[in-house]
Length: 384
Ligand code: SAH
Image (cartoon, rainbow, N blue to C red):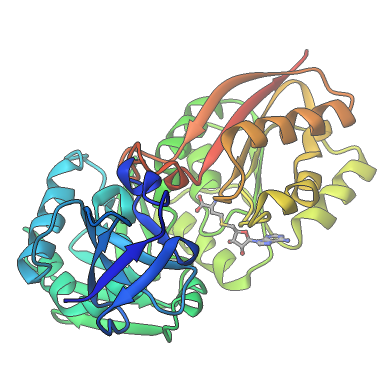
């Protein structure tokens, strides 16, 4: 039996059910666990704390599968996958995150459902070890025709894993993968798109944007496949400008506009920061600005640099709104609010918070793992 024995006093976080064991907490390894093998974790005085997956190359040396001693086998993954699926609302929308890693008791496993297709990401050695069992459990869910793998995120390097992608279960789809959200159809590029092909985490927030957009002059910065921009048009915006630096993302966005017969978006393939400077110099103003940048601040230390991204509040007309986000796990909601407040102060703008935003409910945060809360947003209203 493979065992990790912790140093004295280093069992506190596990006792609070935080699911990570850091390398520095380990006193001794018994047996010869390999990449992703199951280990029992014991305190210095011999108490069994958890069973976990061993990640020899990572600072997070083990990730907990369960808090009691038990076998980890295909049946375990079938149970966890079914539990995660049962916890999701049976929303009318076809796009849904089915498995959200630690929050579903499956560290390193992400699975997004788009209509009858599941796109899965395995991000830890333990998840990798159980690829077959996880894919089988997902394929067995009602209404699922295929499982596609997109395990190509950079974090796999930290786990000593190579990228891996492709169809794992079922037949290739006959046509493009389309997902319906708030009554709009979006094509999901499961093979080459970002993450698993679509930003499901912003679903509720795109719905809010639609409600706020009526009659407004809207700017969607970092628009990807057009999620916010097209909701703005559907919500009756007066005009919409959408910016992204990626040609393929903009092509997808334009195709999505046509797919939904939504006209009138001015799509700009450009760098957001340069374009905003141009707008500022030209005195161009908006009533509603969405700012949904990629991870600009991987850690709190980078937050100051990232703060520059949030200063564009001064492009708003009086009474206008800024909907602004950070998806960096290293920036807490509290720090994010401080960064945005600092940016408003620097811009000389009098602003108040109307909404505190998060990922949709299918991206839950288990209470003993606050790191799960990566996406946060604010809607600011500037003085009129
Ligand atoms: N709001 C989108 C998701 C945005 S993801 C949605 O709801 O689907 C972030 C996007 O920022 C990506 O499409 C990426 O191509 C784009 N991007 C990254 N850096 C950029 C830059 N400097 N200027 C413009 N776009 C950028």
